[in-house]
Image 1 (spheres, rainbow, N blue to C red):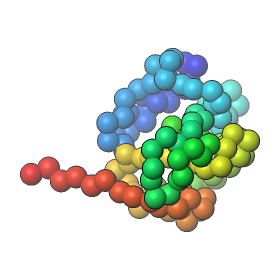
Image 2: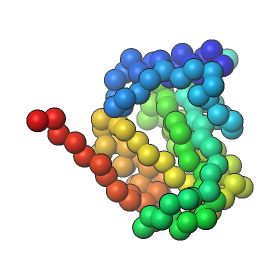
Image 3: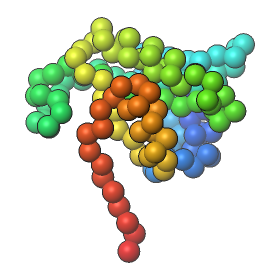
Length: 134
């Protein structure tokens, strides 16, 4: 658990997501998927199952869904397929839980995120919330 919390702090320190804060023990939900190098965790993903309660254009009300809460790989281990394998693991689990896999992101690098989730892993882009400080 300490390694997962330390990785979430590394994510905060990297400053690649808006509003990211380090996890505490109670933030990390089961199931957790981890990428290991020896005994060192170099990436992780976790999420939760839910039932869609509000109408949207993409997911019907009452649908069973699995939301990816976090997926992170340390910078030195990126572009080695680790994120893709974590995504595949969480997707396989999600298929046992429901009909849809969902996620929201607050990334500062939307092009990389769209390439990873949409182009490489088959997710559909649904909407965007953009801001500009005036």
